[in-house]
Length: 93
Image (cartoon, rainbow, N blue to C red; front, side, top):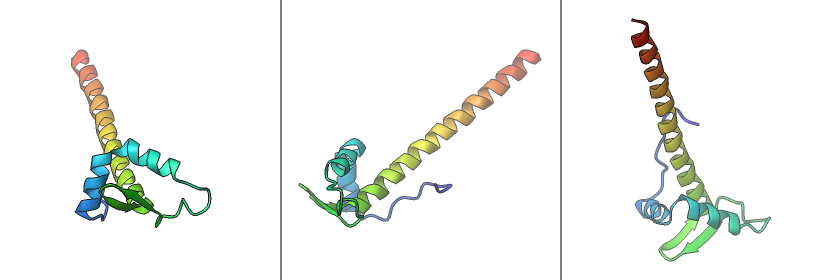
């Protein structure tokens, strides 16, 4: 994973469709649409009400969202460790 979460190079329309449907709906769309042969290719297109979106676009969007969540988790872990260290230092003085 990259050190920084880079926004995927998707068009604003595709990003809007992804945000509209949400991560769970996009994951279920990808899982339910595989046929075991050609359904796992990044160029497979999924027809939606707002237009078609490719599996690659969905994967890029989901990877970006997961990276953003991971960064917040890491930040919270660092903050909790620092809070514990400062609390221990305050108790010792």
